[in-house]
Image (cartoon, rainbow, N blue to C red):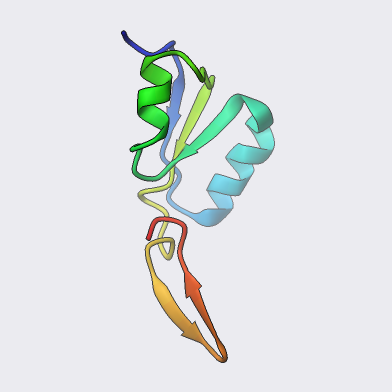
Length: 76
């Protein structure tokens, strides 16, 4: 089965991704790898009107040591 139609967005910054989420709200889903979301879309268990791809957003695939903490990016 094919997913329902959706609009694809590939922001190039975190600010752009946040703006898209603010604009589309509940009608949007985030995708970084697609291993869990795409099968659900193909079965039409979820039907987002907007898909926001985070793969081009810099800094989300990093692991950083920040003082006494470790920050793991959303795409790691």
